Length: 255
Image (spheres, rainbow, N blue to C red):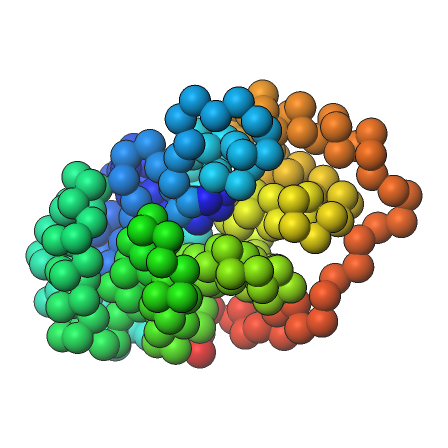
């Protein structure tokens, strides 16, 4: 959505070495089908608001930064054991076979409860299926394993947004950005939340600008939205909501 960048196909273009990439994905669960993102795509939609809400504009992001996930070094051995099955599940999901991928990630989550990636991917699949309560539960499970996973915070923000919990969605988008200020997709999602759901023009402007600054080439759609927001923005800056995640442990240790 918008959201959601959690895109294995895009990450592949910027990573070197398949084993290293798979290990990164194993810890983070950052995967989605070709051309999509956490929030999916919306081909042929003309309305800027629909493009914002669906994440169609952010699906073409060329930001090369892949947010890291802090983890306990002791988990690396478990990750290596799970890598083969995890890679197969990712390939199944990227191929668009969500029902089979869901079964595979559920099996991985049961066999490797130390890894936050499998439940995160379960959450992403449920987002695509528009089953937001199940997506929320999966993202919360991922965060119970590793509170320092920015992808899970971003996904949980999306699931909460779709259930009308806008302030809580903002909290988790902001926690994702505390963990990694260069997380482009979280900036995009927070900007969408600000403009379309919270009616906070300054919040939307701030994070669309941050998203744009992380692109290699400026996004034309986002550039137009920024111009429109600058025209409409009040002089008073937006106020952060309570518990915006500023107290998160960002020392690199797994919570």
